[in-house]
Amino acid sequence: MGYVKLLFFMLYTFLCQLAFSSSLCPKDQALSLLQFKHMFTINPDASYDCEFSHPKTRSWNKSTDCCSWNGVHCDKTTGQVIELDLRCSELQGKFHSNSSLFNLFNLKRLDLSYNNFSGSLISPKFGEFSSLTHLDLTVTSFSGQIPSEISYLSKLHDLRISNVYPLVGYLNHLAI
Ligand SMILES: *[C@@H]1O[C@H](CO)[C@@H](O)[C@H](O)[C@H]1NC(C)=O
Ligand SMILES: *[C@@H]1O[C@H](CO)[C@@H](O)[C@H](O)[C@H]1NC(C)=O
Ligand SMILES: *[C@@H]1O[C@H](CO)[C@@H](O)[C@H](O)[C@H]1NC(C)=O
Image (cartoon, rainbow, N blue to C red; front, side, top):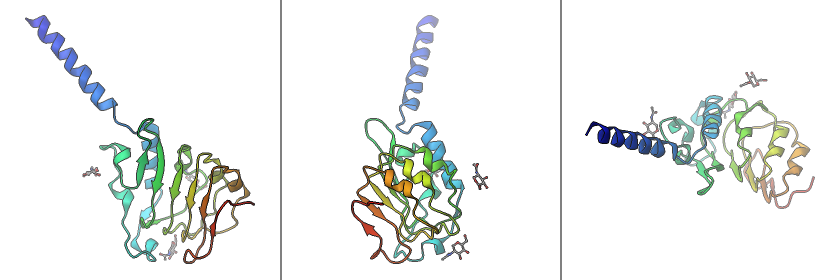
């Protein structure tokens, strides 16, 4: 009898492990997102141009699967983070070249518009998101030049960069 109980116990723990390990989001990508979150403070003024802003990163935490986090979208089969929509998310702070965001190299869409990254340059590392099709850096207070590395993004077909209202800076098939 005790032997059967042990078997059941082993089966039970095995199933539990399976349930927990089947969360979609790869751990390293969740960690990169959390590191990214902690690089910034939340300040509603950072998204003052938005009709409606919401601190999407505030709810990001380890106890939930990162694919369910606000603004994060994963590929349904591979689980890779492929979309990050942080438009109007009240983020304020420096956006460094060593940002953990650059670890998310499967990203296809990246929207960082209407946040305040004042005092930051647009890192050449944006050119390393080789799967990127959409990049939106509208009203993000980045300064300096647009790095030529952006032209390495061969799949990019929608690039928005401007520091005023998005009338300017809309480019299709960018060629630098
Ligand atoms: C943007 O952030 C900088 C410092 O990081 C701050 O001095 C500036 O006032 C902020 N702008 C807005 C509109 O909040
Ligand atoms: C983690 O996130 C979930 C949903 O996003 C939220 O309900 C929960 O309160 C959060 N937990 C912590 C410790 O912040
Ligand atoms: C990233 O770079 C900045 C400035 O160069 C530095 O202050 C910060 O500590 C670095 N962060 C990490 C995680 O290395």
